[in-house]
Length: 248
Image 1 (cartoon, rainbow, N blue to C red):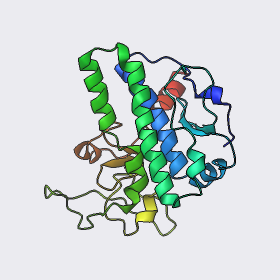
Image 2 (image 1 turned 120 degrees about the vertical axis):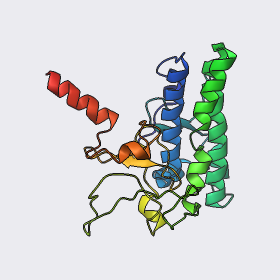
Image 3 (image 1 turned 90 degrees about the vertical axis):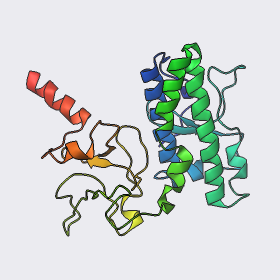
Image 4 (image 1 turned 45 degrees about the horizontal axis):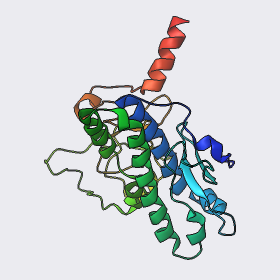
């Protein structure tokens, strides 16, 4: 993706409700997760130590950028960690990415609570709980090392659901991404279509039979029990598109 001007780091709107602030947080978080995982080579290349102080921004439209910080003081929003590019070649790449991830998590929370300053205590508590239900950027980065239980049974003794693939690699039956995959790499680039979170084998996931994207069950309000009765799952976006076409 192209580097955008630092000015674009400013929000496209001013979210005021708990739901709108969480939506803004989720979009920014998803962008940062992609920058540090699936887009990591591009991100690494943009962080040239010979350039000026650079920051990593997650934007409310779901994109990310490496750009100079805002010049105005105080800035319109809290700023990310300054000068992340200077340490790029001075430390182990994984350690550097982990450090950027931790600073990114701190920035995401500061932006969310900057918007939440006018909320009451109960609303801020609800917002924090919604944020805390998502894996952090740091957790998404290191999640590939997550040790999976390949027994097919969770701690409660209930069987895990699984997705079987044909020899061509196509999903035969879109259901839950299971812990039964033998290779961690098979889903290490799978992101939730709603929150942008990286695949985690310990969580319930469901795949859309239309757009073939994957989602946390909690993000689309689908439980394992409910999934058992769904023959053809449509995600919220695909369901919305179908409804519009029907009305037309």
